[in-house]
Image (cartoon, rainbow, N blue to C red; front, side, top):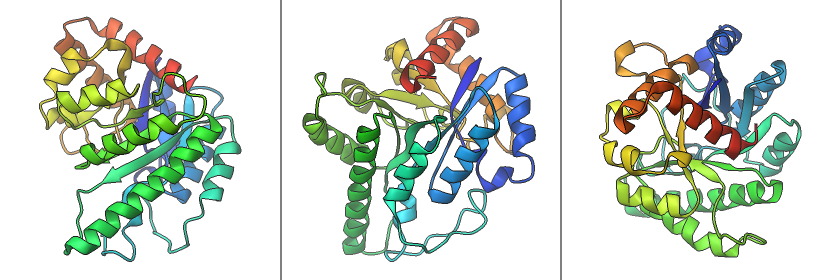
Length: 282
């Protein structure tokens, strides 16, 4: 069994065939973790996980891009959800959702995203502060519930590393002063990768490796910290053209990483599967 450690079959892109996609993936030897991006998609991820006895799990969390309201106008991603609501953010609901099912194995995806920017510097600083405060709130939930964290980071590696490096020394009872989690869809350089690895984190790779040259990181990093994912319905491997990405396609990522590391596919599959089981206790 291979694990797609970052899927979004809980998103609107799969509203008509989520069960079909999941069953095809499981039949093809691919398990998955469906990741929440707000309360609605987190709840949907839990619902899907509860429908399957094995190898379908959920993570719950608030993606930083959903903090743009009141700062600047963001175009709604229709592949994510049919409607975005204007309800106030209530993190007690996320905590309750995480406790509602044993199939919730992580808090995520949470983090920092500076890709979309307000027009003024003042608004941007407000947006950054809102993201950091929200990240810290959700990191505390993960720490309280003893769950690993799935970090999202886009155009913000320095700030995320700074936050993690500062907070790691304050974690109660953490002798090793390290974080338990993964930086999904890693897009940084080798120097940034080393800093994340030094903080105890795993790195997740997906179809972004067709767009960015991550060879140095993939070949130099320790094998026990590599995870594979699709981030479906996004980042479809280039071989499949302009089609919706699905969990089964994680095998394309495995093959490319195995080739870069000069090992056979079966060995790479075993490594990443063991890593997923260790991190997420599945």
